[in-house]
Figure 1: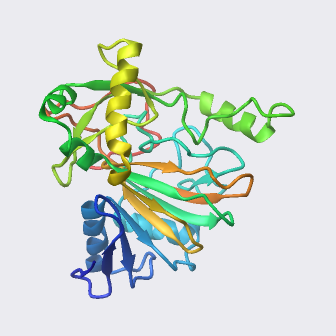
Figure 2: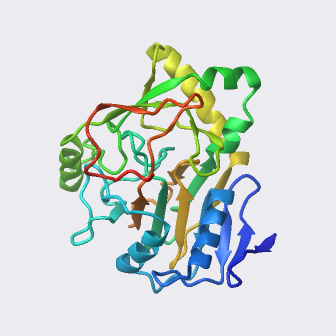
Length: 309
């Protein structure tokens, strides 16, 4: 189904029942009208992840100029290197790592990015899709007794296994130099933050689950209890009926609401190169259903991101 928004050149076509829409008839850049930007932002809030085809004209500068219309860019990452000369652009590069684990971006800091923009740069001949899940509908569909539990539940998130900095040192033939360099960057600064498992979205008022692979433990629970409860909740999020899968094409750009989604980069492209460039926009500190803000335990992320108020 295609709908028309206030900006006459924008069309929105749903990509899945629970999440996702394709935005048509727009050429992205830093020169869009306020009405068009508002329509794109509303589509993002409504559908959680939105996709644009045929944006071949975009480079890093164009992607960043468009991103600035939606918010304030963060640094590329709290610990990992950005591109030379592009402090806000993080390369998601298969030469270093693969984002093949369910996560919400950068939840190990207190100021979780609000929005992420990912642009295809180099794509494999096959495979390499990305899948997104809706953490708002996952919460809404929980049984009432489980909601009562998670509304009061807190979790400690850490960057111990950050996909953008984690190195696989057990490669045939010895340590890979690129992975080792990334690992050293990653270990340069440790972050741990205590987040509510249920946060209130600052724009929509919706409740969503804050989980993903950066969770180390639930506060007040043993490791065995954490594992069991985490898997129960994650399975609700990543149920296939609650996801949308995007097969990248040259010229594609995806934008997702990082406050309402998790995502997973499918590593089914063998040893082919795959590279995408990510920009994240500043977010707020999550607030629980009873109004308590997330608390950093280790690390100060003020260098990484301003706070979006």
